[in-house]
Image 1 (cartoon, rainbow, N blue to C red):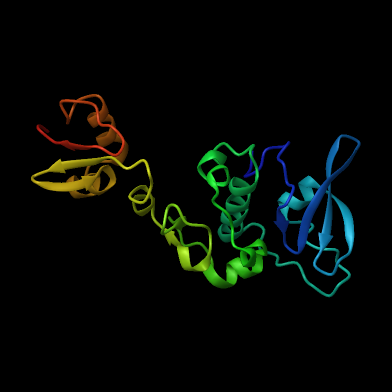
Image 2: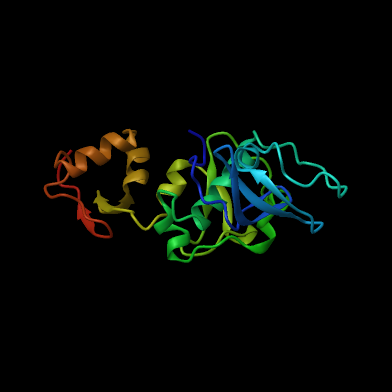
Length: 205
C-alpha cells in the first residue's frame, strides 16, 4: 500500500496542476475525481492516475508534468497534503484535525520543490514550530531524532543533573532509541513509568 489508501478522499488536494474539486461517478468500479487544471479546463481523472503522478494536468495548456512522482520530495509532499486534508489519514487528528494547514503556495508541488529541494537521505519533512502550518518559513528536512525532539509527545528525563528527551539521551548514551524507551517504560531505567510532558529523574541504569 502506498501513501494513499484505495478509498482515500482526494477532495481539495492538488496533483501537479490538477486541483480536485469533486468526486465523479466511478467507471467500472474505478474511483474517479473531477479535476480543474490551472488553465481552467475540467476533466474526470482516475484516482490511481492522480496518486501515481501519471496525470498531473490537462496536457493542452502548455504546462508540462513535473516528472518527479517517484522522488522523495514528491512523496513527502503527497503525505503532507493528505494528512492535512483527509480525515481518513491515520494521523489526521494531529494535523488537519487540529487546524494544521498547508500554505497556498505549496498546493502546487513545483513551488514546494523550489522552496525545499529534494529530500536528503535519512530525513523527513518537519515543522520547526510544532503548532505552526506547513510553509517555507516553518519547515525543514530533519532527522528522526530532530523530529522526535520537536513533538508534543516528548518525555523529559534527568540524567546526571541534565535534562534530556529520550531521543537526546539515547544518542548521549549510545543506546538505541526504542531500547531506551522500552527500558524507561518498563522500569528498567526509571523507578516509575514516564508520563508525557513530565520530568522524571533517572535513578539507576
